[in-house]
Image (cartoon, rainbow, N blue to C red; front, side, top):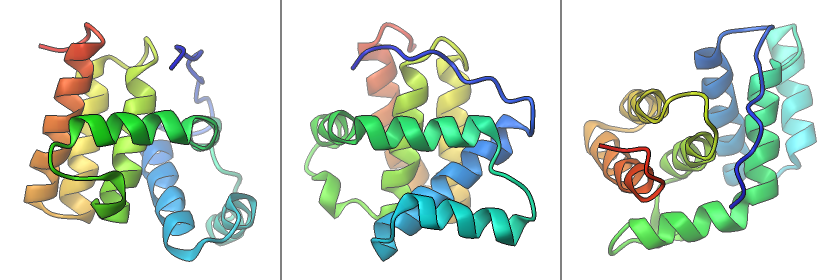
Amino acid sequence: MAAQEPVKDADGSRRQSRRAAVMLLYQEDLTGHAMEQIVRQHEVDAGRPLPAYGRGLIDGVEANRRGLDEEIDLRAEGWSVERIAPVERAVLRVALLELDQEDPPAAVAIAEAVALARRYASPEAASFVNGILSAAARARGRGH
């Protein structure tokens, strides 16, 4: 997967944008509705547009889904991407996309993903996400 230009977020924190992107990708996975419909409803509910960074993450995942899922399959030993719970799958897709950018640092992308998995899934999911993303960061020369 080619490195992508980072999207600057002048209209909201990256943490909020990342959380919104994960939740919207999760909704798309569960409902099968078009992402544009999901984003429009989110913006109506939130009373404001989706921040640029969140939109960039969603667009990046949508454009690179096949490659992201192939990497998840590769790194999730004994698990196929289809067997991974939708929220964890969304977290992994967003974080892998961020690992292909210079900013945020790999440690930040991983820590944020682990926090999202812990909050919306479970401590076990957080460990699973951490293992996959740590291996992906090392493979990119960005890990410990």
